[in-house]
Length: 288
Image (cartoon, rainbow, N blue to C red; front, side, top):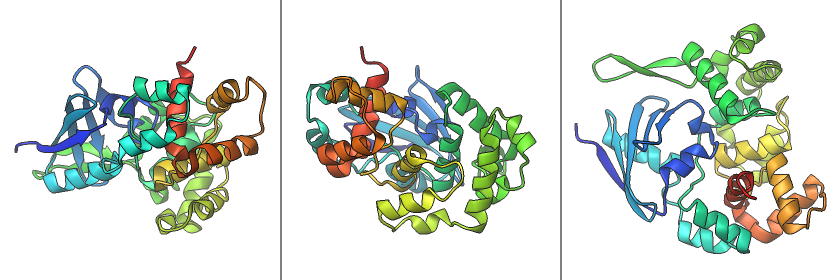
């Protein structure tokens, strides 16, 4: 079967995949081939990027080309008007340089539960360990994905109901550390008390309010889930790197409270704070 072709502009697969978003945590990416192997809820997608960040193609192998196009258009936010977004968040030299350096880096949309679990694991953690823990959880507890001939080609992310039956000891063996207890609590809460999918059409403040009811989910994680699980572009996750970068670039190194940084981001970037944050986060980590 010939791969489905999706024409893309203002898009860079490598920057998107390497920028620490949930779909990266358990997929396989080969930077030399610019190729991503990604298990969705029902298919294993084999994605290769060709061309440039200004004009390129995503070549997608999978059992259903229509499904692949639909899924990737959503997951990789391919309908976002990046030129308009860039024009609105490029408010200063730092942001202009961040956009130039990582041109084409997109935010992603992921399953809300998948996003919740990934960002609980991410707390006080680094990308390598997050990825290792998440992959072990999927390998051990995920449901098999089969191709049209019945061959097992991968595993899908386990649901909250599946995770509810995993013990803290088993989670600890996946390298989750102290987060095992929070994963257990979140699994039970999102199975018995909160249907994450029913939050899809709610406002960002309401989504964040509901997410904060999950034990182990604080301000930053709630914003990450709202942004990358529900597509709330006004969410502005603030971790240590973002806080330090904002203080250094915009407040001459003066320490600011989280609520003050949220206010600053809302006034400066308005309903595109999520995109601004991703560029601030990634550029700030490599900025000297």
